[in-house]
Amino acid sequence: MTEQLAEHYKEILTGLGEDLTRDGLKDTPMRAAKAMKFLTRGYTQSLDEVVNNAIFESDNDEMVIVKDIELYSLCEHHLLPFIGKCQVAYIPTGKVIGLSKIARIVDMFARRLQIQENLTKQIADAVMEVTQAAGVAVIIDAKHMCMMMRGVEKQNSVMTTSVMLGQFRKSQATRTEFLNLVRS
Image (cartoon, rainbow, N blue to C red; front, side, top):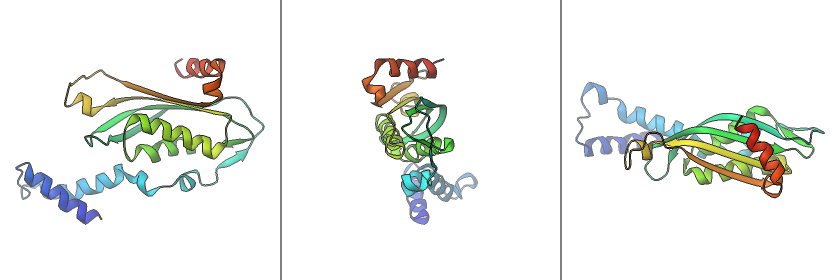
């Protein structure tokens, strides 16, 4: 698979008019292939593998929030990066998830060719599935290189997406509490 990707990168570089024999590009096709495999490693992961049974009984029924989870993804339209932060909250109903597993869920979905809108929903649905929470909320703020480096070239634009499930959708008070906590 990596060899095949490297061959495609050779074609792309040649198509751009580059000389694959020059020092700076001699190993670039293989490096690029390995980088792309790393950047899209989420395709080889499953939710069960990522969570790895790190669900624990708890009598806590108050909101749990993990803030400022960095994320790096590739836009499926241009294969350019988008980079941002994710806020995840859930309301336990007898089970809590290991803290690092929330970040791993974010990474699993971010490390696929994506659009931010779908990424936000995938994270929320996954957290809801594994925790059986009373509600899940996810907000992502990200900068998109496809908008910054090309096209309209707007350097300071930030896209915000949110998904509210369960109590976060039904209860204005719960949603407001979450929003106040993550924006403080």
